[in-house]
Length: 94
Image (cartoon, rainbow, N blue to C red; front, side):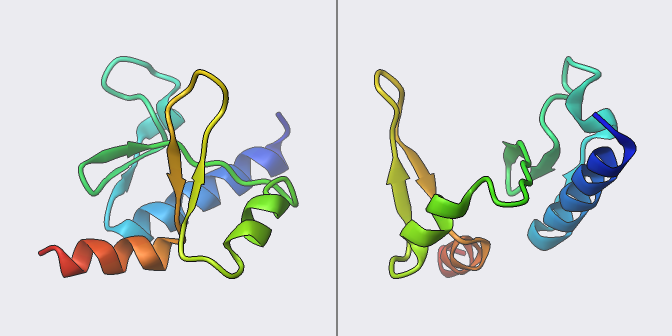
């Protein structure tokens, strides 16, 4: 991975951590042990991924919907929701 990609990832991790009131994990989780994942916040361990256009379909599917449920064969369901929707949900359950 080049410096530009690494810097882009670091910026994304810091931005996401700030959005959720969490903190970035040192070394982006590569240290292992209790330092796994990229961000800790909202009592969850988060992995952050940024792609130039790699998630185009996900954004298209969310365009007219509040959330997206996805599943691969023999894998558990995953929920994809915009961060604003997540924060609203969490705020309404306080």
